[in-house]
Image (cartoon, helix red, strand yellow):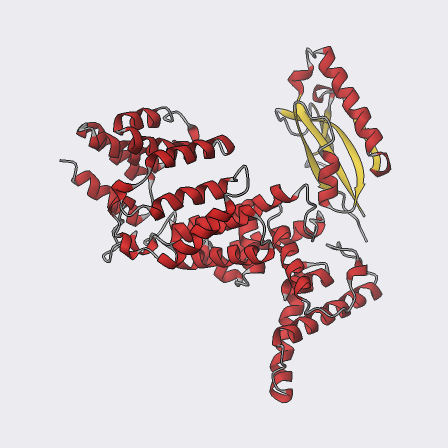
Length: 392
Length: 115
């Protein structure tokens, strides 16, 4: 509804006002006239009419404000056409996730405008004050209007890069929910649900896109393991020790079929490769039956298209399981000087694990202590402390 | 349509002992840029290095303080600009990507319109 109204209003703030106005009118009109057969279409029509009226008033007062679109779009056309809704949503997604906006603003705008969360709810998700979040959203909306961030689906040559920006936002939302960076709980269900809903929305809007299929598969296959990641008393369980019977078979089946689809396109994108990695774990009946050689191969591909130190770290861990802890440790130590990993607890905890397996207890102890210093999630801290105690 | 100022920033030290072929390539790049974007261009200039700049600030006693140098000392200094007309930010960014920027980058700023 908001997406359809923005196209007419040419301005996000005005569109938000008009949608609120439409709800207010429904509250008075519906008790008398009854609920219309298509309530959403009714509300959208009212919101769009009120946007057009406002624009006319503005023109009369000769107050020309920066517009997202030229006013010729402002006609009172019928709108419950499926295609219109799809296009409007896509336009809004690409506006919210425009690379000219700061990444945290992209996520916040997406939650506010596409998921329909209130400013207070978005603030709560990012553990900031409502006033801070309100200021962040206002600044982003002001930039959209003033710098004229366009409200349209990018041209085919720009599309791959722009879709990647959208998928990055959805993925960031998921990873923030899957392992909350701070707080008492490991998983933030609300963030995970929102990211999955957005991925499903994108899948409906861009059904043939392999990267969209890849991201949705990645989310499903990773989330399928969430029930077994934390035990009843809140302790973290490693993939190696998880009770795989608790894994969500429904999500795994859906994820696997999406991975197969995504990998039909060559070369596969980073989300498709990450999903393929998650699929290898999902298909292994237990930890020792995991196909580590296959995983190293997938990480090798991933590192070439996405040369991130974090990917290299995960590759090194896979190498350790495929070729033994000594080889894995050498691969980890090659990353020791990566500045991006300097404050990343997983490097230390992976080293600690390999050192422990090699019987180098004293070095393992130091590495666990390093890892403890670097994580602020209580569930992860508890887990690391226990591993440290078990070293004897 | 809206107007955007495209500010070209670069590391000035790279211009101190310039490689003639690189300079030639840059000039050629600007010529091609001008030719390609003729209808959108509203103006543009290259600037002398920032050590030729003079900064003036108002002081508390309604006078002025004049100092040597640019307003903000940065590694990447403003070296030139274009003013372009574009339908929206995406079009302005697409134009800006055609500017030669071997030693830095380009900042895209909307030009303010007063009613």
